[in-house]
Amino acid sequence: MSTTTKRPTARPEAHGAAFMRLPERAWDCHVHVFDPCFPYREGRDYTPGTADQAALRDAHSAWGAHHAVIVQASVYGTDNRCLLDALSHFEGTVRGVAVIDPMTTSDEDLADLAEAGVRGLRVNLVAGGGALSRNLLQATADRVRGTGLFLQIYAPDDQIIARQAEIERAGVAVVLDHFAGGCDPNTLAPLLKNAPVWVKLSADYRLSPAPEQARTIALRRIVVFHDLIPNRLIWGSDWPHTGGGKDRLSRPAAQIEPFRAVDSLAVPKLMDEAGLSITACRDVLCENPKCLFD
Picture 1 (cartoon, rainbow, N blue to C red):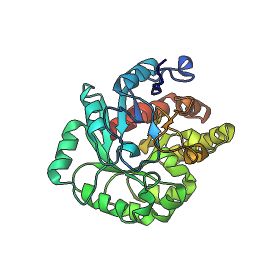
Picture 2: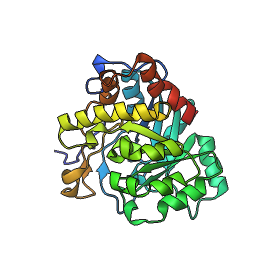
Picture 3: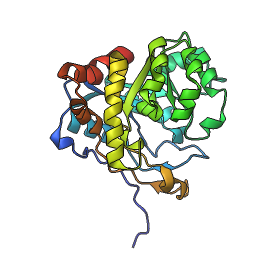
């Protein structure tokens, strides 16, 4: 009998997707692709299952998503080969957000990334020791300035709040991942008013370990963020829903981490309950991301 362990693969089915299809030309602005053909970095926080470009295509076909934005995951570090390979399989309908070393990346490197479909550079202050790199955000902002690319930040709420002045001075468009790290929108109101900051309504389940509480928080955040920046809100499913929390801390990093079983379309379903009109929902799902990524 074989003792080989089969690597789990992300399923194309959206939990609850049968009850909703996204509007025509909708963008899913935050997905990851994990293909074990491309090596994961040493010192990573976790090892994902397989969620390759074919599985992503199947998932989006089920949901009715027409465009995607593939975000470089922390397990690949600054090695963007998996991201670039995935971008090459889509005929201009997919964009990318890469991760670089701002001290070693040349103008030619950035031009090559843009030519391949990359539209932003991500700074991750949560995973992979990013929180220890005090100058990473500023160095990446300096590197991206003048290139036409935007700066994307994944950070917890306390760091976003502490770095509001730094974000405002970045001099480029800034995208804040995952409900702006869970920040209270009212706390960010001055920043959102004074700088070209976008907020991504993604990973609602990371707002609280209690599902109902996370749903309640997400609903309130949608209302307030839409009141503050209706033209700079975008949505991402966060597919294929990597894990985290206590489970990750107790698991060896080299052991394959299962993906979460969550509703990929939970946030779009909440938009109607939050009181957004059909036009407003379409703006968030279709028009706003078109302005940012196209």
